[in-house]
Length: 310
Ligand code: NAP
Image (cartoon, rainbow, N blue to C red; front, top):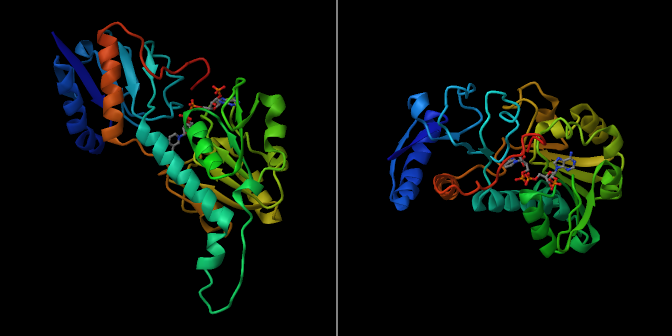
C-alpha cells in the first residue's frame, strides 16, 4: 500500500522541504508518494503551511491528519471544513532559534549596547549596566518557546517570571496564571516578552492598562503575534517614556506596511518575522514521526486543541 502525502505550501517551500522529507520518509521503509499536487480523494496526510491556497478540506475524505509546518495555527483553527486532527510544529530548531533571538534582543537592551556602538565620536561615556540578577523578565506565554527562552535567561541570572492560561510550575521561573494574575506577573518588570498564541482571548493582552504595570523604562519584546499588542497604546507608552524601547518581530499586517509608524519610530526596532523560522532539517523528522504514528494507530504529537485555538 502507498501512503499519499500532499505538500500544501508555496513552491519555494517545496524546493526546501522535498529532500529532507524524502530522506526521513525513506527511513520508514514504506511506499509513499509525496507531491504538491495529488487528487484529494487519495490523500492520507496533508503537510500544510497556513499561507497555502488550500482552505477547503472537505474533499480530503481519506486524510488522517493535517500536519502544520508552523508553530502558530491561528489561520486554520477556525476552518470549519477541517474535521480531522491538526498538529502544529514543535521542534528543536524553533526552540533554539527563539532562544537565540530572545536572548540576543534582551542582551542588547540589558547591556545598553546601542549606547556604545552608536556614538563612535571620541567621547568617553562610561555606562555600566546592572547585573542580570537585578532585572525582572516576564514572559507572557509559558509554553514550549516561552519556557525554553525563560530558562536560558534564568541561566544568565535574570529573575524570570512566566504567565500562562493554566496553573504551571517551571523550575526557576516564578509562575502566574489566568487573568487575575496578569497584573502581578507584569508589576515592576524590566522586560516583557510575548510568546502567546493569537486567539480571541489573547488579543491586546498588552494594552494601555497592562503596559502601565511595567517598570518605567521597561522594554517590550514581541516575537509572538502582532495582535497581542494594542499598537496605539504601545506608541503612547513609548512617546511618554514609560516604555524605553520595543523590539517587534510580528505585526497585525505582514509585511508591516511602509507607512506604519513603527518603521520610523526611534524607540522601535522592527524585525521581519524571523525570530524562529521553521527549518526543514529540524521539522521533517517531526512530520514523518507523526505519519509513522498515524500509520501505527498511535496518538499524534503536538495536537492543537481547536476549542482553545492553540
Ligand atoms: P505553546 O507551547 O502553545 O504556548 C502557548 C502559551 O500561551 C502557553 O503557556 C499557554 O498557556 C499560553 N496562553 C494561551 N492562551 C492564554 C491566555 N488566554 N492567557 C494566558 N496564557 C495563555 O506555543 P509556543 O510553541 O510556545 O509558541 C508561542 C507562539 O509563538 C506561537 O503561537 C506563535 O504565534 C509564536 N511564534 C512566533 C515565531 C516567530 O518567528 N516570530 C516562531 C514560532 C512561534 P498554557 O500553558 O496554560 O496552555
